[in-house]
Every structure is written in C-alpha cells, then in structure tokens.
Length: 404
Image (cartoon, rainbow, N blue to C red; front, side, top):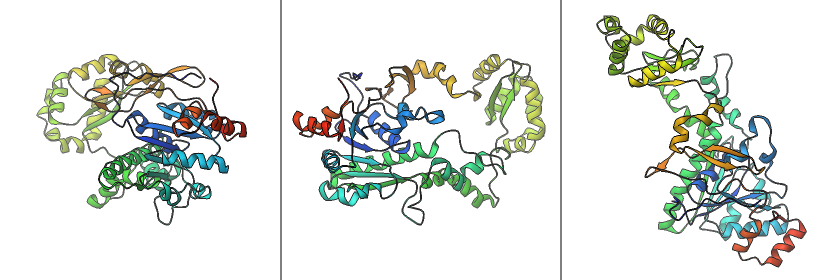
C-alpha cells in the first residue's frame, strides 16, 4: 500500500528528531506510541511478519489497530530468530526510546530486556508498560477490567452488588499517557546527564491514582465510598432530565449566579427568597423536593429548544450521546478535532486527534495506519543495511516487505 503523507513545511512536530522503537500490542503500549508519534517523534512499530494481532480483532476490539497506529511506520520482523534479534538490537541502538508492553520475562528470553539493552544502548530511554509496578503483584498478568475490579473503579461505576467496568479502556490509555510523561522527563534529563532511564508505567497503579479522590474522601469524611450510581450528589442540581421528545439532557446548576439565572429564566423568582434554597448547601439538603420540581419545568421542552435556552443562560448541559454520534458533532468537525484517515483495508474514516492544541493548532495526522511491513526496507536502509542484506532477510522470512 502506498503511504499517504500529509506533511507540510510548517507542520507541528515538537518531538521531531526523536526516534522511538515500539514493541507493543493491544492498547497500552500502542497508545503511548501514538501520543509520541502525534507529537512528531519517528515511531517505528515492530510487528511479527503475520502482522499485529489487533489488525484482525473483532467485536469491541475491532478498532484497536486503526485507533492507535497512525503516524507510525511499520517493520515486520521475526524476533524469535537470531537474525531477527540482531536486527532488533540494531534498531534499538539507533533509537532514543524503546516502548514495550509484553508479559513479564518475555523480552528477557530474547535478550531485549532492559539490562541487556542498556549494555549496548546506555542513552536509551526504555519504557515498560505493565500490569503492576514492582512489588508482590508484578508478575501477574492484568487487563484493564481486572485492575478496574481490584482498584475500586468498577465498584464506583456500577451498583453496590454489581460492579461494572468503565465504558472505555481508561487505564490502558492513561497508563500510556503516564509513560509518555515519564519518557519526556527522561529525555529532558538526558540532555543534562547523557544517560538513559528505565521507566515503568502500570495499569493497577494508574487505576489507584484515579481512585485517589475517593480514597481521600473516606479519610476526610470518615465515611465509606458510595458508588456514583446511587450516591447523593454534592451539588444542588447535577442530574439527567427528560424532555418532551423522549430525549434526556444532563443539566448542572451549581454556582450562585447559575441558580439566579435559572430561577429568573424559568419564572421561579420566589425560590430566590425561599430560605430552603438560600445557599448551595441548603439546596443540596432539599434536593429530594427540588429535583422533581425542576424535572417538571424541563419536561414540556423539546431537547433542542431546552439546550438552546440553557446555552443562553450559560448553564452547563449535555445530551446523552453514543460514540457514533460524535462523528457528526459540530464542534469536533468545525474545530478540527476529527481528522480524515485511511485504514489499511482502504476504507476512509474520521478519528479523534489528541485532545490538545499548541498555539491554537492541533497535532495533525501525517501518516495513515501502515500496512504490515510497509516501511521494512526503508527502515533497514536507514540503519545501514544494503538491498542485498534486506533481500536475504526477506527470503529467510525474518522480515516481511510490503509490496510496492
């Protein structure tokens, strides 16, 4: 497949000049590589000759490869062979950063663990993305849902007797983000010291970090945590409301200015002098009466009209969207938050960019997700291998080279 490049002379690439070698699969490692790639690093994804297994996933995991593989180059390499391991070492030696998220001990068996790599690449930042940081659990295998259960997130999301995972791979993605934070810190440090670092980021500890406010709430309040599905809101109005056309809107009325604007706009000035609602805490204490009354106010409105009125009043609100609704979101489309992408099967789609901007500009999609081994020859040439050397590896099955 011919790569589609969208580079321009003024492209935004703050990490240009940094080379990353990515030995990863699933979500955590690829999301770490994606962020670095979007920031402008040259990220080389190492796949087995048959391709990364997420390319062929189905069901809820069908989008893994397409989501986390843009702006990367692919080399298809058999690291189970001595020849493949030698190529891997040469690639690592030419890189600034290495990412891996395989099960504990796997890379040690092929001589690509940190201790082995640091011996020939002391300037390398080596980032391992695991289930657990060093400790009693470090050799356990983990998945996002596993750590959501043991880390309290599933309890806080579901019902008391029915824990439920969050509807996204929150620990995988955030674990990758923390890996990027540590990598960038290590790159800055290397400018002073000339030395690399061994970095670890983990699913479980990420989940525990997410639970920090709930943990501290127990300390401060002296009360056990209550799932969000049944807990009382700490805010006066922070609820879903039905509208006439069968839709729902989530509406918040928190501050004093918001409360006054709401009461005046919906002919409830009497509530402004009602002692039950004198302060925010008073309104929280009377939520049992207040929320049903506000529901009666909103029920005769169509969703679109109510949303427009709330926006005029500067009251935070939100429709209840499904993921597919976001493709047509006017803000995402008009602000450039979604970018066109061509998938390896040739289909066109839109995908979200990183949720950041620099000087008002979004980090672009420069390269679409690659085909298996699409850049094998190009990458090997860059580390000094001749066309004959590359052809020998290809004939031996050590590498796969995508057809021109």
